[in-house]
Figure 1 (cartoon, one colour):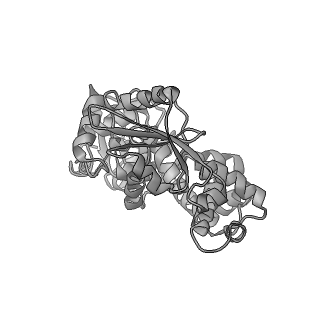
Figure 2 (cartoon, helix red, strand yellow):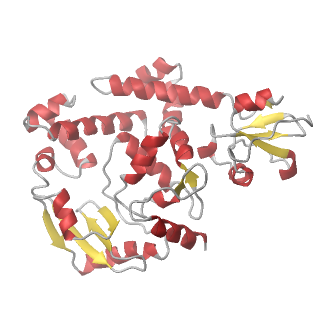
Figure 3 (cartoon, one colour):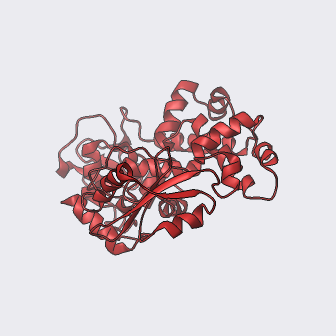
Length: 349
């Protein structure tokens, strides 16, 4: 086994891969494999087996590369099944998206050839959402798109695939933060409190509905909120709200210390999965867009993952600054790469 093929350094960072193995980080399963020179076995990063010495381990981009180099699959973690699991999740997502109404778990699991209880855990592990939650978020996305049209609220509800208005209003409260009629009417009847807080990285806007923080951004003010919700009631926050806003603004200096504040977060099913993966990145660490896409079961959706990061409306609370390009460079950031670098540097300290 002393003639193993070593991966090009441009493809993989060996030390980052080793760190992922030490953490048994499931988010990297399917992104690369580790091969042990002394045993001739390759494993996925989350393998529960005892770790070999660092000097005896190399990293390859995938299972096929490991097999071509002469390694064999670990019987404990079964790294070849990662591809099968990801394909199953992608097939299930396609089925859910094509269905005019939510499907039962049993039908989705049977479609991809898994037992229902096992596939339920697998789907949530890969996407951050259960199949039912994914279907609800998808239907809410359709409702949002339908409400943007000219038809009535009632027509939009049925056009989005709801069988009854009550279910649509329940989903709208969860995913839109307001009733369908209020959403269609620019936020009429919704109250949004806000404060603009000074920070070392510039002024930070913090805004919240009665459900929780709905927007955190740099270089924005009341006029920006009114542009998003022209008919909502925009109110300067009182002393209690100022205290909450101060907790959020403190993240500019200590981005690793996320406060326990309620969030009012709305996005597509895909965006919610990406944002959940971002919040799972430990402070002081980074991931590539490709790694995030793989972690939510959509390895081919790297560009869409970047767009979801760009659509993040809760800067620092959802740490999109922890995502880099595949080559390790900073990539883009809605509020300037200088701020992104500053946040990363402060986390690493």
